[in-house]
Image 1 (cartoon, rainbow, N blue to C red):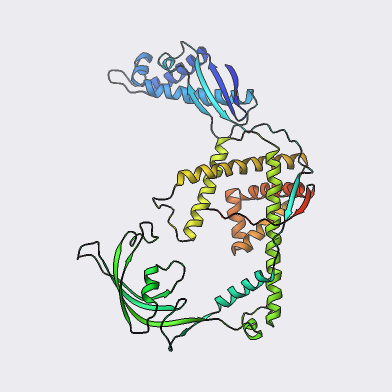
Image 2: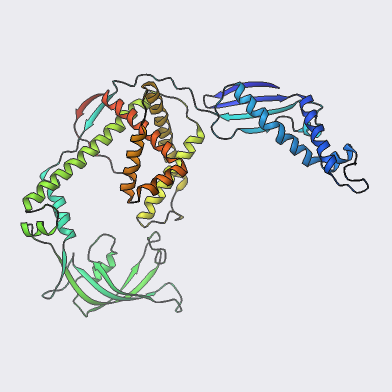
Length: 443
């Protein structure tokens, strides 16, 4: 067997394999004889039909059997000969299809494309320059958090001395008729609907028509829903509502005092203790955010210092993983990922760039771990499994059994090794403190 290796790219290799006619003939003859012994052909005693007749009758079956015998070994031998470590299954194609009609007369030539990991030359990875930026926590930040806690503890009190105003919650029973549908259209019927006047997500027609009302009042008004309205049943519809007001209530916030602080539970024995704890929590979040950004900064510097091609199959896998994560986030917010207006193709292209960096980062951390002889002990894996069990609130043995079945323990060891490599990069980085920069909001 003859083989020839061509470097298509750092991650793509092409093997040209030539299987000698004699080897093909030997397999063809042997398998033909096996078919002759078992074949039942009209006009011949079982097992006594001429080989030529058997080959004609079972042409495709014999040919397939020959290829199943020859190709895997030929491809595997060529891969071993050239010391390749394929990612996934090689792509095998015939260069001379016509030879399949003349088994054993000419060499059988294959073109095999193999995806491999690139060779990475590890350059500078210690002394990487990075900037630590920490979000400052102000009194205003603490007050905003306290206000949000008060909002969560707020109660709705009936309004008896005036009509409804912005910010009030108006409860209605509503009947709606679709003006752009036939008279046979089903009427919209909703009861005990709470409308926060001027609140987020409230259509302006509801706010305008339900401001200045009292219990037992009735208002008739029309609402035109936009085409992209989140509720598909209402999107693009024009509906005339008759709304009966059953209650008007105002939000009443608790006083910021010791009694309210104690009602929150925990170790809050006073409003001052609550403020101190809130500040400590915000400082802890700020530190965690700063650490995360520092890790990202160090990894970005490492990636920028090492430019190399990454295997497309790994990029595709990571892109799919990121896409699945985006879909899960959307569903958790009540958004249907299948909505026709969503541009998944555009999103995939954006995520593909991030996925490529993910793959490159992982490969670089593996290289650093290798260079620094970083290892992970069984005890460290066990500790991580215990943490997963606690976080997921599942029995330890159930988590361990699932991980063992799916090969998760190896994945955990791999992740811990890369985490250690990243910690080493940070420990050896040249870090300076910088002023906090507010992240840009994603559009």
